[in-house]
Image (cartoon, rainbow, N blue to C red; front, top):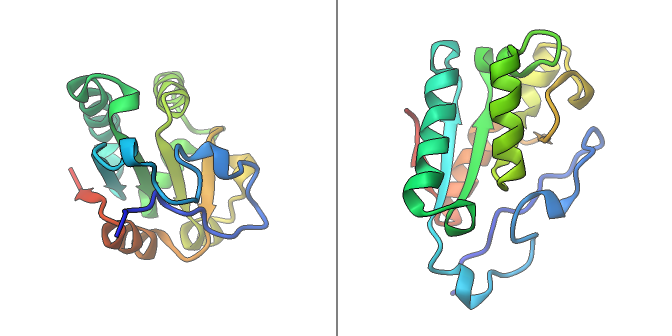
Length: 150
């Protein structure tokens, strides 16, 4: 069976469509099957910069953004670091570069609800994961993504 890229979760609070995630929601092409797929899990506030650095290094180590599919799933306290009004300029710049490189940015819908956040409250590029961050991570693993929680 050919592995599939992650499908986007349904959301009424999402401003980015399936094209936001490299590969869309259809079956993977044969040339994409060999591309590593990695899901980064971020929940700890003290790891935000570390995880962003890991992703930057991962992309560079693979030879560029077209050589790896990465999804960053953020939930819990770490999500506050990506709020537009709280994010540092450095985090904003780094996240923008990662999003431009095709990194999927997923915000836990449960955390967003608990923190009373909408997508408009977060830095650009995020999609809302209505089923929750940990469920999304488990689904990505089932789809063949390597799971990393630095």
